Length: 266
Image (cartoon, rainbow, N blue to C red; front, side, top):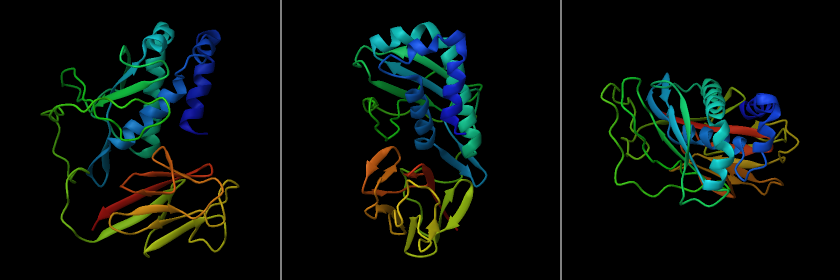
């Protein structure tokens, strides 16, 4: 069972079903949960081959109307969302610098149905504060924050990352590429890797929502994924698309299956 499904089931049993009323609001808790997952994915920092650090301190900005609906349950909902982030991180093998916290805030600039996530990797000894980095993925209802003047520096207690961030240009070398599907790793050793339901596909996925030749991973510079005329299309990092550039950690949804693209030098 997926992390989001377990999260929904826990909410259904809270406060004798009180959360059923919350689900009628424009922004639903499960939407926030999905956005928090994407915030982790989009702000993951690889420190070394065994450790990828993600944000642990989150603010969910809501419109006045949505905030008023959710505020009476803010404490319990924040705890449940934090637990969901913890479960998702364990599934993705992410780690944190400190305790996981999720807070709700009212943002009068947002219209009903829109929300915004702000996050920070906050060490246990660091002071309060948030960085307003947009996750880079827009979903229905998601409103990206305005560009900040600059991001706060990494806490002094944090060691420097062993690998460059995505915004930097690393020294060129041999790049290993692979995909992960349900925990299984498939190396990309050729210029293209076809994913589909057919036995002729390079990577076969037994999923009725996947076409015989659904999409292909292109080991180009930069790497990319291309839809091959599939029935249900592809979703890359939350966006329906025909073709998209990939980065380490990009999530490609085909049918009901999630394919994670990975790459590393060496």
